[in-house]
Amino acid sequence: MRKCVFLDRDGNINIEKDYLYKVEDFEFEPGALEAIKIFKELGYLVVVVTNQSGVARGYYTEEDVQNLHSFLQKKSLEAGGGVDAFYYCPHHPEKGIGVYNKKCDCRKPGPGMFLEAKQDLDIDFNKSLVVGDKLSDVNAGENLGMRGILVRTGHGKKEEFKAGVTTEVYDSLYDFALKFQEEQSQSSR
Image 1 (cartoon, rainbow, N blue to C red):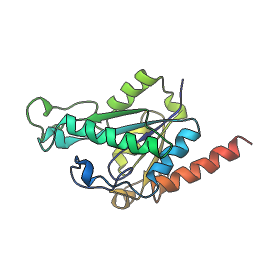
Image 2: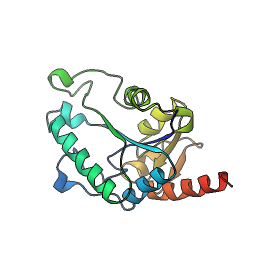
Image 3: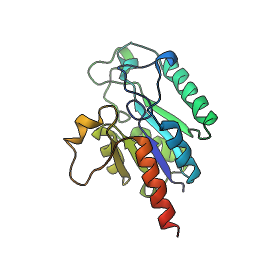
């Protein structure tokens, strides 16, 4: 089984913008591409898991989400990293329209996207971690036995005040990647 770093997208990899779906509006968080590269160099799969209720609300389409992920992948590969898979939840239990109006298990903190990735990519949750700017990201991973990391970018500064004392908090995805790289280096000595 393989080890994985699950990454939330908005507010973690890219600067938080409400209902982001246009490539021209996409801006990487400083150091995010370098962080992805570090995780890959450490031998981890990198999987993006993102709630996309804008699809459910009719603000944009699933094709728009996929186009944005193609752009993110292109930039990540150019920077020497790369994302192994993208999973997104297009549903919302109250605000969804049509087929997207449903309570599902894929919407974080539900386990659906993680379980699908585990099956698709043969992932060992006990050797994996999740990084996000919301406690729903962290809790989703921790509930499955993963190490959860909260970052202060995006919604993270507000979420930090709700976090328990045991929650690991870093300024950004990049700051965590550097610390994680140092941990991995020390443990391999």
